[in-house]
Image (tube, rainbow, N blue to C red; front, side, top):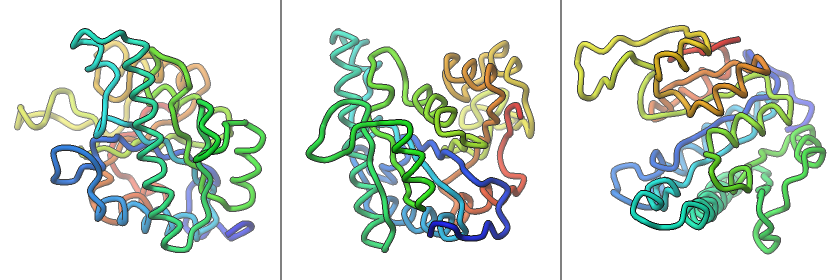
Length: 243
């Protein structure tokens, strides 16, 4: 895949952030294999165009650190458990991509050498330059930081041109569209709009990081087949923040 032409692509290098909950499909917990396989297929389609692609996956389908802390567990302990959940999801996606012929590397922010490489910025960039799909696991390696923040940080470290956040909703709304049929979807937003209106795009730390480094965010519905490739191609999907 290395050196391929960027046919119909708006970006040369991007980071795709997926929520762990999105991997559940219709299940109430865990990983729905058909969902993982579809993601792998779409990621392969994007990589085949020559776009350098990195992924960050949450762990909420297995364990959420914040929810564990609210039930009385020590927050640091809960967050480390959440990091391990992201490693499990990353390995599942790696397996699905490689079964379809792709080449991947899982890079973990915590040392777990038997299943993942340690995260090193220069090595990650080299993997991308060689056409490998890089999956960043274990968040930032620190408690109290979300996988959204990890996605923003890694996107900037590798020089990504955009952070693509795949959700189960087709963009950012002024209120919850599930609860409010009259909710209005935004096509574009400024970083300060998101922060001042407390819009549920990503947490405030990740939005501030993107704002400080002028990294655009595109929020889109990745559950629609083909949407990952479309957003990478620059089609006007979802909501664009900043940039």
